[in-house]
Length: 71
Image 1 (tube, rainbow, N blue to C red):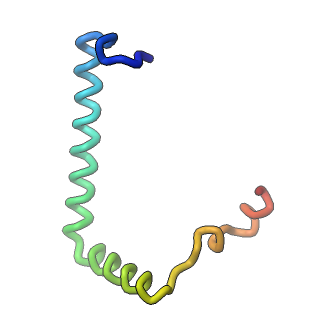
Image 2: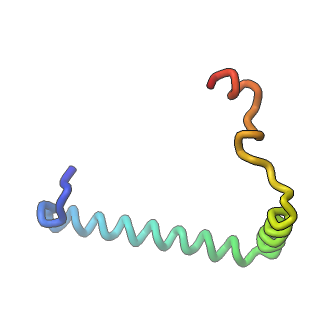
């Protein structure tokens, strides 16, 4: 793979830009859909309250016994 833009062909640059724009638009559409959901927004508010109260679980505490054995 090329490390410099100057080394790209015109088609490679166009594809790189198109892929980046496509990904950004997909992310935006996903965010817009999620933020349009009242249930999603309510779950965010609930999670923030839990966090403020200190009602959290550390990721290391959530590992299953099988994954601990593999470590």
